Image (cartoon, rainbow over the protein chains, first blue to last red):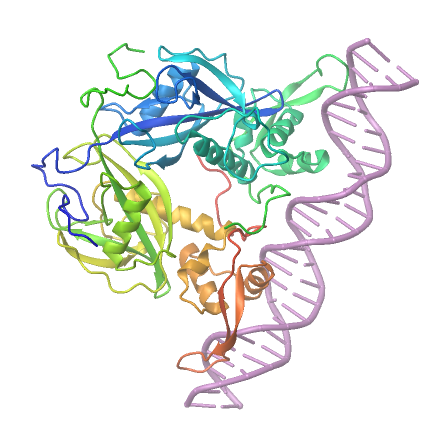
Length: 265
Length: 265
DNA sequence: TCAATAGTGTCTTTGAGACACTATCGC
DNA sequence: GCGATAGTGTCTCAAAGACACTATTGA
């Protein structure tokens, strides 16, 4: 262990601290805004207008300002990027990414968040972004085990954002198992088929119809029935009972995915 | 939405950035070093030697240095504070705490981590700490629902560290359910009774002996038996089979706690 | 009528809860 | 023998998997 000069070994600086006694950082928030559309899990990305990674797609985000908390910054950016200022949108912290070289320009620590939105409006490209759109995660070049053959038309992401997106997807996949969070993806009111399609899109596997219904309906407080039914659009079919989100947040016992590897390293 | 001047709306600053165009932050790591001893979940705290919160107990931690990642900073502080430089110690990121007023001296964003150690050595108080010791979490004044009557001899923590400790405890309690992480608390080799005592200490409830054994032994890769047995120390009893940690990290299906509230707000 | 979607019934299997029982040690 | 700890056997019940079946709509 070296003995290079460091500010206040193991603790914070004294009150009369020297602003140059510790390394200054930029702190940003990155947003993984997820939705389910067209039977697929999709994420909001913006196309960068300037170097580095000019032209590449990246997560929306921005600096944490002087007098706001990290969570306030995330809420603010979410409203700016999606046009959704609704405070009921599910937003949670994912993880913090702080490799020294993750941004070539300066030392940046980014607190990534996951937001789950139901039926979002078309995003608008901000002043510094060439474009903004939702991308299916299956079209992105993400780290981790690749299902099937390699595709050569995958979109590459800027910075370490591919890792963040992969982490966000795993977080959401896991949370559908032991929470009622899937309801956050469904515009209200929704049918049980809607909800099952969300599980199918996020997990990539289709839960058995009958068992899925039994599980959701026996989970007290996950969904509450609403008067009326929705006629199945278009080509026939029995109208479905409508539901809204219930007060429960945990799903105990959980609804487990079938195909998760037992051992991870 | 106001239109106050901000650096690069929604993205990072340009290459020739002005260091005063975004708010400078100090970035620290805080460590929740947990262990199980004397049948209780315990955490390493240091007593502060300087204001603010002089004399109060706080989590060990320190600044992230200029050329290290956040995780490297956490590993370095863990080695400095506990004397344990073993890279096999379980260390994971917990969450990031970034309220503007969490430190009265300056704007600090802290990335909290959880470390699980088995049978740690006595901690040594660093140069800036008056003391360092492990405290049972039951002796700390933590937020959240209080079990039983209020105690008046609880230790108060500095900054927002009580919240961090409460979050760390909930993380560990949950992870014992669906991972094999409890083995990280047990010095090897260990007996199934050792492992059960860890669950008891962390959850505050005692799993049924027979069902616990059945679950752990049927979970492939959680523990691997070792030749030999440990004579029960002192007052007699049948010697117990010894085990080491297995390669599995997930516990599927999970081992659920009995008494978790179904609905959280 | 058929296709399509919604919804039910039920048999089987897995695994957890409860708890009585046996085994092996030190004394 | 006793107390203490380790370990087994087994009955019951909750819940998931599998899958056949019925119900209600539009065309």
